[in-house]
Image (cartoon, rainbow over the protein chains, first blue to last red):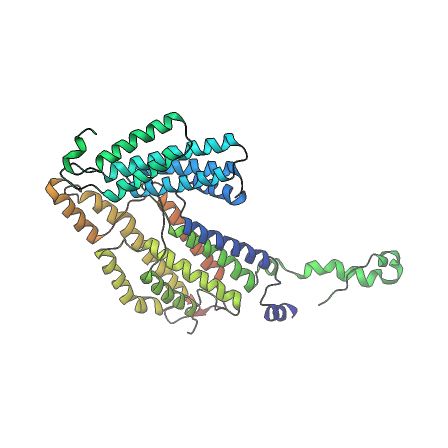
Length: 188
Length: 249
């Protein structure tokens, strides 16, 4: 006699297992919404994102996340997904810069800057490859200018000589591509 | 029947109240039969069903395709069809009619899960999907509204088999065999052939194991429906001779 009365009064919430079940349901629902909104493509991406969520102010998780984003960019590039690769490179850059802000010592900061420079140059290289056309067709100047801006940021940063040399060479290539028509083949 | 608990102090005066107290206390667990121990309350069943529907909805949208994982969410067609099916399932008694907020919560999760399962089972966008969905929608009320809840679930299962056959067997086989020039070849004829193929069905092949995820989603949906299945009243014999339960709308 007491059970129906209790169900009617409390909606069955006091039944064994109902409250834990509802808590689990709410947590899993939030997890499902997050899963679908972030759409992770691999288990490594889920792991790195979870690590950053657990320790958002730490250096190591951000660097690990950046490496994972860089791997995703390389995978997308290998699959021919240029837009996806550019987006992944941009995410990796953002994570590395975020890690540099959280670096506890100059050595780690320099490591983060060097990694950021490499990623930025990779992205610029992809922008150059996707924006350059044969001399008789118009280039995608917007992409080339974006690549040039990225390379300019790298040249202005305190990077190693080899990275600076790579940035200089890439800047020269982009500036040559930006010239009109067959002028791109003429030496400066 | 409320049984007073045995207090620790009572153990020191066995000659006074031991016979009155200990006998009912020892018998109290025996009052609950095994059947009543197994039977869950409506709230427990609703919570379990909502969890299973959530699992079904999440799994049904995960599609491991070539080069990544897609997270598919149902659209307008699947959503409207899911509302119709939820109404039919409640009307025929396959899903327990909700008595409170927890019951409605399970129905809401069930409707979303049904829409996600339909997203899994319906053919990919294109002419094939339009024909199939239009046919199912026209026939739905006549096919699903009559008969018992067992027949309704049986009809749904048959429909699921046919849709799965179309999406996971017929379309992939025809997609591979009805070739024509590949995209970007034959002086542009390949692009034209690809466009024609995409008009019929925008098929995207799944990776190995992708169909297993969808099967797990269907299992979760079926299990949740079983959990929400209302207990049978005493069976009656219908006109056709089937021993089944007719539930009036």
